Image 1 (spheres, rainbow, N blue to C red):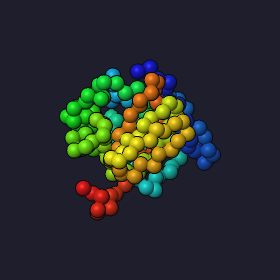
Image 2 (cartoon, rainbow, N blue to C red):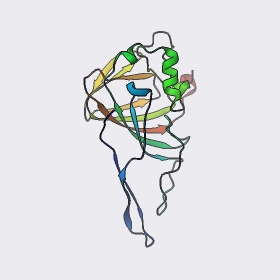
Image 3 (cartoon, rainbow, N blue to C red):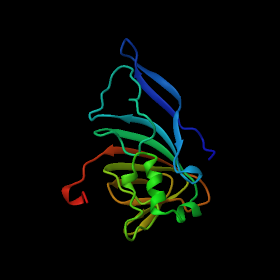
Amino acid sequence: MNVKPVRRIVTGHDAAGRAIIQEDGVVTRVQQVGGAIGPMFHEVWNTQATPAPIDAASGEPHEAGIILAPPKGGTRIRILDIPPEGEGIRTMTPEEAAAHFAEVGAGHASNAAKAGARHALMHRTETVDYGIVLEGELVLIMDEGETTCYPGDIVIQRGTNHGWANRSDRNCRIAFILIDGAFAPELKA
């Protein structure tokens, strides 16, 4: 997939406590998930606690690889480039879908095998996610109903089972801010 790089500008403080631009460059943790048919993950930043520690000039907390969910008690921001959906996704088996999510440490999130699943990549995470469509369009699929999201639209995903389908003929770029959450007892199952 040939996509535009994501630029990241990180601020910090110099030795005198003045605000500075600490980093300015392209995001370096980038990975296509699910092979040629899957989305490109651009990992922008994470925090590993709330409140997030703010110091003079540390960088992003280290993580090995790409992980779907934010760190426990933390947050994550990423950009996804989602290509047009083809037969590879439409004919994906539940086992293939689980393997797709396992690439980002979330095989347990896949719900493709659930009776009545409306999309091969239906999934659920214990997070609150803010999704902001930047370019293109994307269909949000729920257990009941669906809606098409366009540039500027914002989805607040509250730990619900859902899937995304790019039914257009061009890439969709969407920003996600993920916040660690906790299910109410009645929603844990």
